[in-house]
Length: 358
Image (cartoon, rainbow, N blue to C red):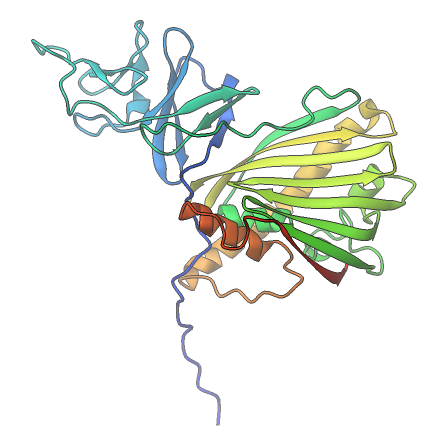
């Protein structure tokens, strides 16, 4: 008798999280000029614009009058954002400064638009997704800026995946031997290494101990002569991922990426690759970005397929092992940040060690 098949039962759960009490990177500062620009942050539609003095502002992208998107409007000579429908004008704090044709007080209550804290730092624009809040801390700062001997490659990317899914993917070692075979790992026999996982209140880090230089094109660019590497993978709330490699005293590469969840399954990434290598940088720099982008595109395709399948089945059904070194820890941190409280037991760092083949 043939076994009877039944449709899968949707779990209705995803790793989508929305931590609001953190700064998020929305774009390069030079991206925002006089014309208003739209961005979405944790599903919140925003409009960004600069006033007459060049200061950046972020408002909810909805006119208080008739709900028209303010991004379709213009910045006036007095630095206000003017709605294209009836000409209502809003300043950077979201206060209505003018209602054309209306006699009397233009700034009566009920005519304002929610305003969000915004910072311009290190050439980037950062927004705090709680309207009217006074943040208790400043945005993240990218490391190795201006350090002697380092070159930097910057890139803005987008992927159809949740912030957690992309962060787990970027810091996941086992998939590289299959998805990126020949580019990064997978071209030789695996090696047994030790992994030390350290978790604290706002981050988790994996140190890979006894790891030889990764095989593949990317590894040969990092160190043509081979050798053992010092390798760290890190996740820092709310969406910072770091991959760090050192080979000897001369070769050092640090990838730092800030991941901003625009929507549940759309994440924007601003990445900086800082490197110091024994070989001349002018020789390697033209090759680093194409190889990195090729690896990213392979990841983007598989993550898009993953997101589509999560929707198709009505939720996730993950099964994890110890090889999923950082993914479960990242989700645990994000869930705690969403509730705005530390992970239980993580006020003091703890460490766990395991072994794996890479």
